[in-house]
Length: 424
RNA sequence: GGAGAGAUGGCCGAGUCGGUCGAAGGCGCACGCCUGGAAAGUGUGUAGGCGGCGUGAAACCGUCUCGUGGGUUCGAAUCCCACUCUCUCCGCCA
Image (cartoon, rainbow, N blue to C red; front, side):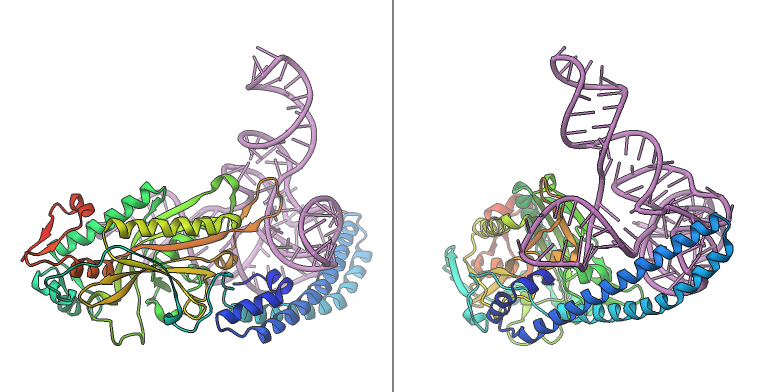
C-alpha cells in the first residue's frame, strides 16, 4: 500500500511511474486526495466537538464533587446538541475512511527508476548469463527420468491427494532433502537466521503481505478456522514484523525459512506445466530481509549475489532478468528473476525471484523503525527472494546431469546425499 | 472438548461505590549530577496513530488507543454484551 504522504506530495511522479507498470492511476489518485481532504475536515470537526464534550464532562465531575447537583444536571443538557453533531461527523469520517481504504489498496507499488518499460515477460531485460550449458549424450525430460529411476511419483500423489502433489521416493526424497539442507546451510553462512514458521496463517497475515484481499483465489483456505495455507514462507516470516517498531541495533534483519508452499494455481494450468514445472505443493527456501530505506538496494544486491552463488555452486546454467514494468508484481518496486536452463526441455525455468518492496508491504504491516536520535518512526523496507525453489531446480538437475550410467549428483550435495549418482 | 482465572506502558504491577487516569509505584532504558573511575545515591526524561500543520524537523495544542469490537452514561481501564488470546485443572493426544 502506498503511503498517503507519497501520493499527496509526489502525485505527478507516482502517476508517471505507475505508467511503467501500465497502470493509469490519475483518476484514483484524484479521488484519494479528495477523500483525504474530506477526512481531515471531518476529523477536525469531530475532534473539536469531542473536546467541547470532554470539557463539559469534566465540569460535571467537578460540580458533583462540590455537591452542586442541580448545576450538574443542567450542564448535562448542554451536551445533547453537541453529541448529535459529533455523531454526524463520526459517521462521515468512518465512511470516508472506509472508502479510502478500499481505493488505496488498488494502487500498485511504484517501480524503481531502473525498471524497464514493457508489457510481457518478453520485455524483461537479461542482465547476466552464467554457467555452462551441458553437453548431453542422452536427453530425456525429467518426467521420463523420474519414472525410469523411480524417484518421484505423480500418479501416487494423484491417488493420495490430486494432481500437482507429487510423492518423492528413495533417492529422489534424499536429493530433495539434500538441496534443502544445502540451501539452508549456505544461507546460515551468509548470516541468515533460520526460521521454521507456521504453514497456516490468519487473515491479518494474508493482508499484511498483500495476498489478501485480491489474491484470495491463489491460496488454499481452511474455512472452518479461517486459516490460509501459505503460498510462500514470505508470508509468515515477513509477518513476524507486523506491527513492530525496530531499533537501530536490530539491523540487519536476515531470516531464512524452509517451508512447503501451497498454491491453487487456479486457471494457470496449460502448456509447459508438465512434470515438476508447476505444482500445488512444493518446497522452497526463502530469504527475507528487513532493511533501512537507505540500505535496501544494497541489500537487494546482496541477496541477488547470494542466490547467484547457489546456482554457481550447483553448476547450473542460469540467467538473471530484470523484470519489466508489465511483468513485475503488484507489490514490488524492483524484481530480479533467476532462470536455469533445463537441457532436455530446452527451456529456461524460473527458480527464484528477488524483490525490494521498499515500504509498500511495511505500510500495510505497520513495520517501522526508529532512526538513531530521532523521535519519529519511519517505515522500514522489506525484501525477499527464493533461495531457492526446489522443483524446478530438481528438474534442471535431473535433466542436465543425466548420463548413460545415471544421474550425477552435484559435488556440493554429495555430503548431504551420501551418494554421487542415481542409478536404476 | 469441559470447568475456572485472567489480559493495563519496554517489563512487573496498582487502579477504591464509574469523575480532570495516558494511567500510581517499581524495574529497565537514556541523559545529567556525584566519583580519580565505577557501584551506590540523586535529578530529569522515557508509547503509538491521526488532526491542527504549511517544505522538513522540533515544540505546543486537540483527539483516539488499558486484548479486539460494540453498548450504557454528561463522563468508562473501571459497568454490560460479543469475540480473540493466555494461564490452571480435567479429558484426549504426536
